[in-house]
Length: 612
Image (cartoon, rainbow, N blue to C red):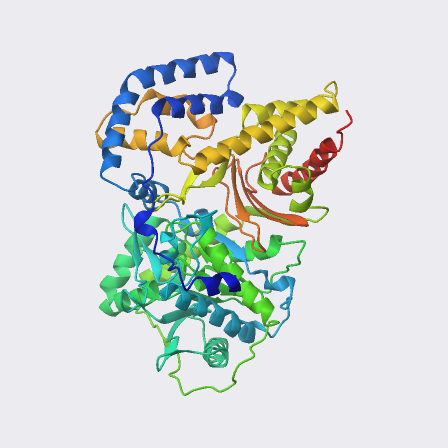
């Protein structure tokens, strides 16, 4: 990272934005062929024949017309999907987004210089905050290195959304407010908001043209912490952000109507660089067990995190940290990047501040005191109750598998990401007795404002291999062959999806064109096999590779009878985090993780049977 940053003086973070290719529209024939292939594992012969007829009818009829209209739309936009995706996937969604949409993860510092230790929250907090603020300055100066695949630059637009960004609730659709500007574009907000015990404070991080130092940040954090721990708790306005979206929008309108000053305070929070949360809990965490810390970060105290904020940096009483982020403005790789940068800095400096201890005479933090009445307090207590009720239903199992990692799978010529995906397929098959439709995130950032595409991991080849593993009459050699076929299929599909040749976003585009034109919903989308195979956001396995660094994350399942499954890959280990709803009798996150670990051994054993 250091070398990259040194080199980056030649390249500016956002310099390639104008030259990135537009997002392509795939061929209709190809997309429908891939779609048909993807539904096979979930259909008997009769169901498949019906769907095949529906698809053929769609292709030669309304589908072709919709496709032409989509091509027309794409001519006038560098990314035909961007606005639609933001609205459909995030801003139109009415369920509470803090729990159901946000993603969260722990900072990796507990693995080296900062193991959990009481009494370190404030000092460590000042150091971690300072490194985050340095990254903010690098971004403003456009010195964050451009991400590339080989020599091809990737879209960096999502990095604009990391700081000074907030979702604002609307009655039917939310909006995103982004106040960030690079230095060349003009002034950008330079204050942060600190939430502690239901109260909110604000202070600037630039004093007399210079970034405040860790000793100065420590003074600010200590002031807030002491004040909140010696006085009554605040009303916890932040809890309203965990509410159902329309209810929060109405509560927000009421709050503003009560006193115009409340709007100014809300805007202070919206425009802040980030929200820094002080929690009183001390969640358990070890390099092998992430379950408790992930739960604390994803479903902790709703009065000390602003659910709509693109970046909540959370500190715990035992000096452990994490982040909770609204998913609408960016995908997890943005957070992975800053987390890795900060972790490397803390590691390089042995967890200490090695600079001057001098503290300048900077203004004390200012409290944001909202005007509230009985109705607002009632709204807050209702929001907290619904949040805590739903949060208590979430099961999280997150562990490190340490017997081997990327080094061994690479040695066996197996792609480590595909290795985990197929292990998960086998684990699900063994646990539930049938295949599980699976969403894996594919990245489309080689295109202008590209974000993600759906990679459907539950392929015909994967299912054949799972069946062979459960059939004692199948030889080891045949199982190995079937596994390698499943690997090859997965790898090709991932390559296609990243190159803009996936089909799920294309089908979504066709459906949205039909809706915009006031046409009836085509039969392809009402066919039971469409949702049974995961279409329309119905994947029982919602999965994503967090990366190859020391950074882990978690999300809730996409459907009630499903799982969220995030993982990261290192040379010597695989770390997985699995979520499920306790109220669903057939799902069990603990069992799925253990079966996935068992599958890792089975797969490596298969690769050792070369003499067969």
